[in-house]
Length: 373
Ligand code: MRU
Image (cartoon, rainbow, N blue to C red; front, side):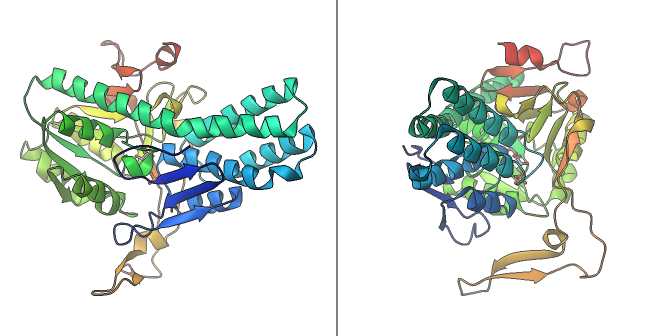
């Protein structure tokens, strides 16, 4: 099976082969990196060669799918293959802590193979059950994203009843962060496809620069009308009345709607509320974690100081990627990768099942209702 989308492909898969677009090299070089084991999948996720909540989950599960295709002949018993799958999935879960999609997907696949093990003694059948479930994630994710894009675009158009919209987004939530199309960037894509996107603004998204490196790459790749701004320029832009709405993705949405997303998201939500424009969270239902009641229980990853004090780029006139230090090398650095936006600031949560708003008398959502639909 392989993904089929006209957009950028972060993940290329066919049975026995997994390639990911190495996002550490973008936008300078578009080269694919081969993953053959769950260890390589874990490493690619941890080092952010691949990132974005849905893409992390898919690459984790497919890395084990490739490994299984290559080593399945070694398993002689049901117990041995089940043990291998369980151990590998538990290991993959340790790659990054915040995006819940990784935990949802690995737990779901484990349930599927465990159930298969209740009716089959054949290690080959158990392996096949894993492969089919992992492979189905690619197409399902693209379909979900297209639905998110259309529901989000409709919500914004209904809200404004305007012909053209100017939308700001943060981090990267596009084809590079998913199997294709994207979530928040999927909404921008849908508006563009419908001819109603006047302009997209993307923030640089320090420290890893998902905005200037990746979202700017996607917006340019598809010739959308777009402008890059530094994170510190958002207030100036909004105060000029140049943005109609802010759309962002999610790494984990708690049961009450509090949302963990890329660091800097919370301040954008505060600004959207201050300037009275909608602030939309776009995410598949696999990003909703009903077991986490509110944002204070979401684990927030802290990353290396190097990401804050250094930047990578190409030496002029060469294809040599270099990292240079721009901060004082001995300063203390705090580098949380995500922050939590309180539900009260979120105008709507858009999933593949529709756009949801809070009950007018409430400050929080009850997302168990969304998952019942
Ligand atoms: O650290 P990253 O780049 O994995 O963070 C990504 C984000 O915060 C995205 O907004 C989120 O994962 C949604 S991607 C569709």
